[in-house]
Image 1 (cartoon, rainbow over the protein chains, first blue to last red):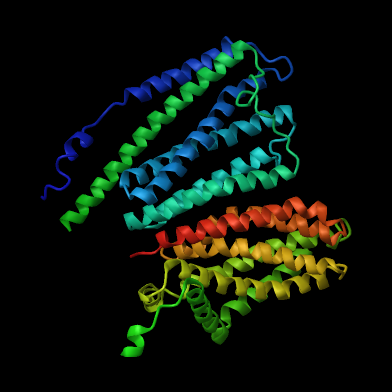
Image 2 (image 1 turned 90 degrees about the vertical axis):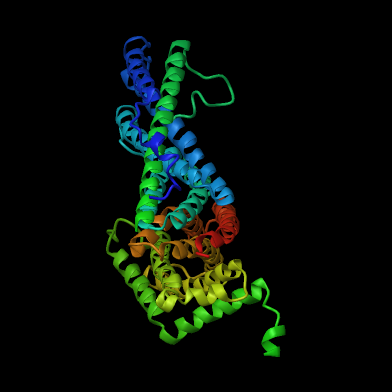
Length: 237
Length: 234
């Protein structure tokens, strides 16, 4: 055995319980309780509006935090060539895919009740759907390239180009009229929601961000271990 | 010896032209890819006609959508071959060893692809006009302009992805998987603007869509040229 990867190996190989993950899961559970039992029912939409606390919060985390992190890590990777940045981009993409899937599943549930249709080709829906396709393509590309350095470069290039594409898709679909509710919380003027709903919303956002951080960390650890195993296989060969 | 020793390497654009000429010479001598893509496009145009009830939807309303969807799929066939042809005997090493910049290789490849898809469009557009009984008027000139804008965007992104996917398992599947989301603004922009022009609407109505096409071309030609060197193995 050579000693190249020896010093870092023991600490990362030790099984670990992530307290952050526990906190995040408890936070999500509390969010459900608060949203269902302690937040007023919206007058016009009824109970269907409660999906906002999951749908809009997941959208903010998945579309802005996760996707933004992937794009920034990709750009930094091409500059600094640090394998850690590639693992961050990979982890952000995969956790972001989970969030985006949650957005695409919860959205139609609400849409069927309020719009009377599961799906419309509205700007936000379409952009989200194509972002989902791009992340799937990104992960498929990662799976199809064997050599780690090449895989990192290719996926970084795709990550950067994807972040340039999203505004174009949004703009072009926007030219076909849009049906989705306009932003309620993230907008220049004050949020148009009663304070109880706002509290639930921001608590939900915090819980989902915590969950994102915990999942990202877990996924990043997995990527590190996988690369470590690959390095060792290389050494033993 | 002396001649080779003091010869200055060509500039980026001259080198790009040499690369493009090499690719076009290969294509011109074999013609397999071009003819296959062309027949594919013509078949697509005719098959699409029967996908709708011609008594319910006017053929002229279908034509723009058919044209641009077929165009992207036929374009993918050409793009696949762009770097596929460099795989045999690792021909790409010859290009990488040449005293020319990486950007010149990309621009040359893209230029050859642009000629390829323009050739397909030059036959497909008249075929659509013929088969879908479109009015043959001044709109045709504007259509050529839209075609040029769409072709540049498609080729810019597709050439880069061709270079990336050629080295992967399942290259034939990955290229469309990665490219098609990027072709969405192109298909929408080209189809919407040409639909308005073919219907005889004023150009102002097509203008927002044309602006998207122009912006797409500028952003992605720049970004892909800068990104291309990262897709090559040193």
